[in-house]
Length: 400
Image (cartoon, rainbow, N blue to C red):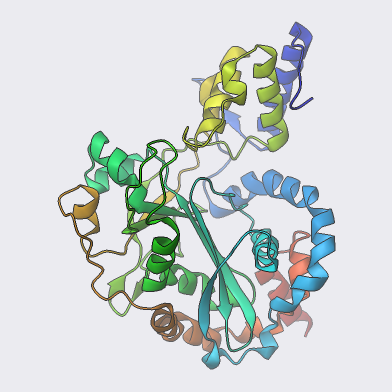
């Protein structure tokens, strides 16, 4: 039972231990000589397979919601045959809670094989529209950056004190992607390029410049000077060599260390939390904003240790490439406290960046790979049942 009093008996502990081991075995993990987990593979398909249980659980939990909303929202998904590619006109829209736009963001987020995080702390969610066709290109979302990220901190050159003071000026792109058929036209690269625009900076300033920190109780007059992100599938083909007009958008700065909690299902996490509750452990219900995004990881490690399992089973071993997008020309100096004023040096607007990205990626891709025209908007619902968008297009091409 989740949320109530749980009585832990030795038999319950044994069953929970068996459940943990069976869960990792089902995902294909192997056990190293030192007791840590070894992932079944490090190729992109292995990454997808490892996340399949999490995605399927999320889809199953939201079937009723999707059934209630898809008839209203499917109109915003394009069919490839209807696109005049040369006239695609990107625009971003901030998503506000409890609106049809937030419902559209939610529905679109179920598309990706790697489930999108809900983010935490400060959040800015955006829909990316094709204004000419009145269809959804995709989405991106910025949230608070994690406190500890070695490769990022070494790249910036932060001391611990500098990081504590300046982290408020950094955001992380925790969700980003294009929906079909725009994803077949390298729409993901287009969307990633839109982060480095004045529109995003202005949206951040309007919402968070004068906000008061939950922990400090003070306003730090935040300025968005850089955005980080991590690849979904190991080495990224989306962010690597992402340049527009000679300007780098995202630069690779290292990799994560392979720690996390995505391989722990929500059901198993609830079981581990209930186990800590049965021990009257204060960490079971200590998750408040300000304690950091690693609450789940800390709880999982503690519960595994109390069960007599290796806490390092929380290390899944799937590393992700880390990328850094500089919005202010003096971002590093500002983050280190060496400069007091931010210089944006004429950041492009979304309109200007969008058109440059269209010329750089989308239009040439449409000419090289015209099979995107076989995609129909209703195929999006089929994709939610597990069929890959590109596979659908290829199948239709073979059949047609």
